[in-house]
Length: 252
Image (cartoon, rainbow, N blue to C red):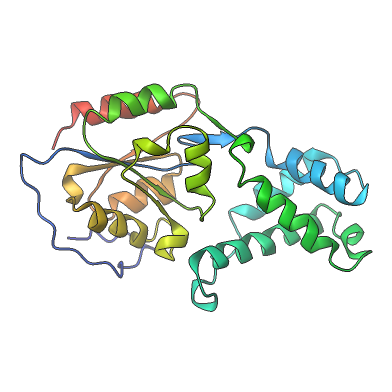
């Protein structure tokens, strides 16, 4: 049964799963901010690529401020208007990057030559497809080794088709039964669809499933709305090892 919270709509993936005492736990994990993080702040990356593309220097702090302000307020991807979830996510990032550049006063330099913005955006988008652009948190591998003894692991992330190659390149992809993304679900957490997709594919019941992520809204509220045992990871005060303890102390 879905526990609907304000602002969260029903999922298109309804399920009648039931739990049995013999079932192992299933642990679902967010990716960015939970398992991995960029090797440098977004503002530094955006500014560095802009200078390489146009020669213009913009303070990374200005880019970072624009990124943080606009990322959380940008409208959701238009999944219905694109042939695939990945295409919708890419278009969303394209629009966001343009807004960030305008806000930071850097967009004009990309209009000097035809196609320069597209070159800049494609280079930036591809940058985050490279495993070398990401790092595991110090405890991630230790956590995954221990957590895999509790039951199957899977990722549920607001990401696109770049995520699986990134996790594989960082050496942790084999830990997961599946890597679910908002591109695949064509919806972003806290919408129930990504969680329901994972529950259906993994054939597990909400009350025997845990989810951990760093976003209170997307991860904690989104998972809780379906009856999952949600853990809000608040770094740096907490790590994935705290989620491991939480899972061990609250068996199905």
